[in-house]
Structures are given as C-alpha cells and as structure tokens.
Length: 385
Ligand code: SAH
Ligand code: SF4
Image 1 (cartoon, rainbow, N blue to C red):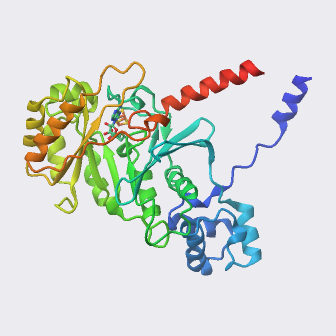
Image 2: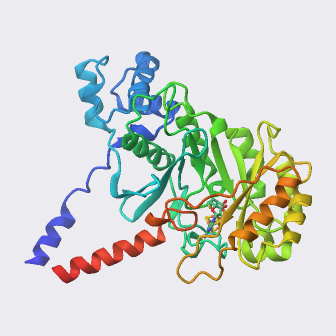
Image 3: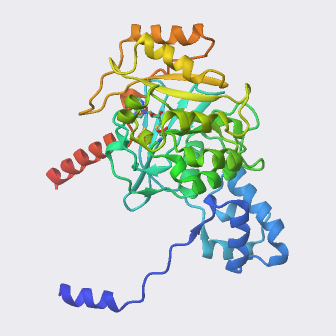
C-alpha cells in the first residue's frame, strides 16, 4: 500500500514554487517583480510600484483586496502571483517589564527571535536577528555555541519589524508618538557577515513612504568584522556598535576569537575611519561585565585610554548567564565603580539594565532557550499522545 502511494507521488509534477512575498522587497525589486510577472504593464510600473509600496510599507496591509486604488482585475492578478502573508508566529511572550519577544518561523527549521524593549532609544527598540546561529564563537554568548544554520534574507529581517508593528498596532506608520522608534541589530548572528541583506532591509524600513525609521536610529552591532566596516557606513549610514569586551589582545582573543584575525589596533583604526563618525553620531562600545575577567578599575582605565579621541558612548552590559556558561556577572558595586571611572573621563556609560529576563529575552539568552522550551513541549506532546 505505502509503496503504491510513494510511486504515485514520485510521478506527480513537482509542486509549483511558493509565490513571492512582496513585503520583503526593496522598491527596485518590487517594480521588477511586478513587471516580470505580467500583472503590471511596464508603462504603469512606476505608478503601481508607488501605490503598492504604500499599501504594504505604510499601511501594512496583508491582503491585495485592501488596495482600493488599484482596479479589481489587477488585484486579482497580483493575488494569483504573489503573497503578502506574514510568517507564522510560533510563540509570543510579554515580560513583566513590558518587553515582548516573538519566535517567528519563516521556513521549515528557520526560527528567528526578536525582542521589543519599550523605553529604550527614543521610545522603544526592536532587537532583530540577522542570522540563525552564528559562525563566531564568543565564549560568553549562547548563540555562539550554536552552529550557523543560515543567513536571513532581507525579507526575513523586515518581517521581524512588521510582526512587531502588527503587535503594537502601528499601521499606518505614525508620524509622531511611535512606540517602535529604534532598531538594533543585536539579536542572533553577526550582521556584517550578511551585509547585503542587512543593507536591503535597512533600505526598506527607512523609506520615507513606508516604515520611515530614521537611519540614525538604526544601530548595527558587530564583533569586529573590520573588512566590512567601511562598506557598512557607506551603504547604510547605520549607527555603529562594537562589541569590544576587552582592551588587550590576549584577553579579547579568549572572549571574541575573531580578534585573532582582526586584533584591537586594526579594529580601532577601522572605527576611527568609520564614515560619518562625529560627536552627533558616536560609536557605541559594548562591554560585557564578567566577574574577575575584565571588570577591574585598571581595565576601566585601559578602556578610557583605548577609546581616547573617538566620539564614543560606552554601554556596560551585565553578563546574562546561560546553562553551562563559563562566566559569572560582575557584582553590582564593581560595575558601578567601573562606570564611575568612565564617567569621570567624560564618557556616557549607561549600564544596560537586563530586560525581559523572565521571558529569556535578555542579551545572549536568545533562541537556545526557546529550543529548550520547544523540546519540553514536544516531550509533553509525545507523553500525551
Ligand atoms: N554578533 C553581533 C551582534 C549580536 S550580539 C555582536 O557580537 O556584536 C549583541 C550583543 O550582546 C553583543 O555586544 C554581545 O557581545 C552581547 N552578548 C552576547 N552574549 C551575552 C551575554 N550572555 N550576556 C550579555 N551580553 C551578551
Ligand atoms: Fe556571534 Fe555576536 Fe554571539 Fe559573538 S556575540 S557569537 S558574534 S552573536
């Protein structure tokens, strides 16, 4: 019986390719897709692209029927050839402190976490992922213990912003009083190993006739992919954040193994040359506080010396432990002493309060814990069935 079924399947024509989702395309890609599909005549491409872009990126519609200034016949053609669907939300959690976390599935085995943190940035910041897993193995980072599954597409990066705005009820794009005001590429993965997709996603979410996030409120955090810094600045004008964590090569090599390839002196030179750096557009240095490892007053003084002359902010991140992590978080008093030394030297050095710890949404806690939750959910299901 099963053999018969298998054979009949094998002889069937392959399933048609999934329709292209228009919500993750840049304007140029959207225009090309509309014309190539035959749904829009080349002569009308510019007008139709503008209309459809606004429906998708300004109004956030997910149904072609809502596009009331487009004739019925064209809407039907569009619906036949394309989709505007959001990805599946596998899990949504809200923390006591208002932090929201989504686990989004964009394809089989491709699950992405993003976290919205109210009260960060101008109004609230969405922390997006750029890869599933990471090829780098920073020893304090849980994501770093997971192999890279793959780079996310621009559409998958934009989808994280769209899902967040659906949840916040922020369509059409508010001009003022928006809750989602900032985007930080500080979720899973190394954004500079996926620069093409990051740049396209930024183009989409910063477009003035759409989500219209200011590029000055979009921050890309890197562990120090020196060779891509110039391209990042020139292509995206993103605000730059550098995961520094140590002030000498010996220690940084242990914490951030990429430092073996790009030592601190090389990294600092590339930061000094970052396009557009000024007092109004400072680089943020991220520094994770690890007990007895990098948290002494001497370390703080070395940090001041290292960043001297660079328009900079320093963000101290209390270490978020994870099961089996080889570090502990510095004591609160130690962190305050460290911050005071930086402040005295003239550097704004906010201590990043851990947010959303109760829903496992804090830095370095992403993804892996969700896998654990899902594994336990699977066990429950298996036991029930
Ligand atoms: N790959 C990029 C961006 C993602 S990590 C990068 O490394 O910069 C975002 C920030 O979280 C980085 O500064 C990273 O060093 C920090 N981080 C990672 N694991 C952490 C943990 N367990 N506790 C606190 N911060 C962590
Ligand atoms: Fe990758 Fe950043 Fe984690 Fe390092 S800190 S392993 S670069 S996600």
